[in-house]
Picture 1: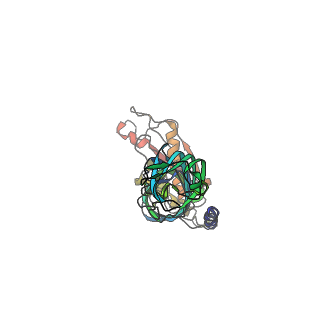
Picture 2: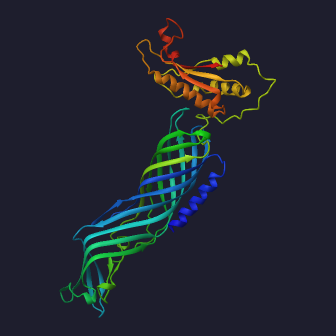
Picture 3: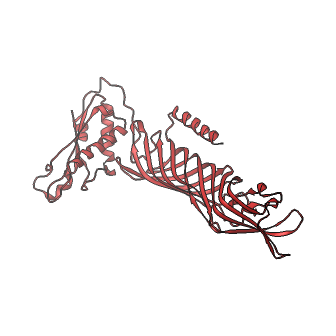
Length: 414
């Protein structure tokens, strides 16, 4: 089953990699992935697991999108029972006498594992800006699990029978299934049913070449419906009148003292977007550059003025382009598209006067943010030179109130 699931997902990824469909992404999650349920005289804990998904991003509006797709994951949980805990139920022996079957455990542990296909539907929000961005998503997931495979071990099991009609306890009759089992090793299977979970995630968006992006952050899945297929009331181990060798371990999930079983996962996620699925306000749709037009070679005064108009950041140490400057940069990108032979220089400036001090690196980061924006609009990187001023220079001399205008980016035609 594991190989089949991995094979299907790998085939899907290969198909995606051969296409240029915008908005497709591959997601890898890893962390503590398992289930939570109450266990009388015992405890459970999540174990490491992971999942792999194929998702598609549907753009809704600026900074909002919808994620949907398919995932496949492995979920693991460890259950332990307290040393000395006794579990009881009523049985009938080989001669027809009813008795109370008592099972006392020492060093009892189970590892439960299952695979599940999932269908997530998530609403995603992006923070504005053309530089560093954050994402937040929330929604739900439907799970379709395989049966849970359980590995069972116990240092010792003491199996005894109390006969109320005779007021006698039998604890050393191994040929009739009553006695001590040492070093138990066994396995069990539990049927699971489809379930629903709430999902959420948050993290950072990193830009890659060719319109690709990496989403790196944290995720959590919280189950809201029961995964157990039915409420069994089997004993921890079944009574065997033919001897201790015939005892069968059933596991805690088949006992009445195990509560509803719900998904719980938390960890790190990395999603590689194979197309430009970021909001329109952050990265505008790329405009294809037209072939050189020998007739259109002169830059007008209006176009030159539009290119040289400063991009004002305003806030101290701000390196994300303010949204109010997007129309100006869109116009610059259009001019550069109309003049494919034109090259420009982009220089970032800082403010170090009037008691305000900025690191020289801030100026260079501002210039890089503008360059990334233009590249996102389809302008080739080799047409842009980027630099940053190391010292502050005045915009309006002798006017301290205009210091904000020093925090700017200036473009020039080369």
